[in-house]
Length: 227
Image 1 (cartoon, helix red, strand yellow):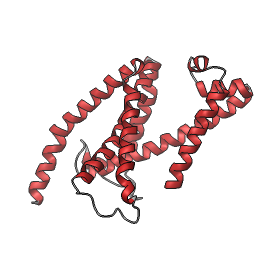
Image 2 (cartoon, rainbow, N blue to C red):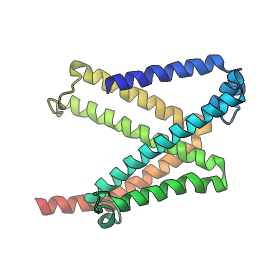
Image 3 (cartoon, rainbow, N blue to C red):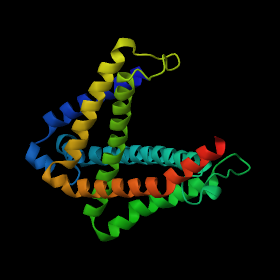
């Protein structure tokens, strides 16, 4: 895992530097609808840019499948605890031990989210992507914040399996928290991202209502029954 994180960090920084130096100009590149492709086309020509575009599409598809699989697992796990509507259906598995209903539901949702916004405006789809990015980074922000809070109260387990950062755990968590706050701020505070910020706030509010109205009462009833 550490080698993977290191490799991604080094390669990502190298790509940012390479594209920055290879671009014909920052302002011109940012005006393009596909900045990375425009840089490749500028340096190597249209044919190489098309090949690069094909590689990007394959990568995008692979990442989309990964996110879809994760969302399916999350829906199935929550359904086993009776949290989402339709939990009785989504927690079922077929003869191959596959949560078919949860998989189909997430697949349909993903297809709709990718296709329907295009019928209205590209800006709508960009807002959806930006809101999803804010949501993901907020999750990581909360993980780091909760870790630091529990560490300050000395309520953390003494070990997390075989992996441990030892005395570096708190500094790493603090750096992660500050970085995630920076990322979330970058995705929301600039004027160009205000629409994303408002959309993210709306979804956070809906999530809070769902938690208070649906999840919390069921959790309390389950605790009362088990207690």
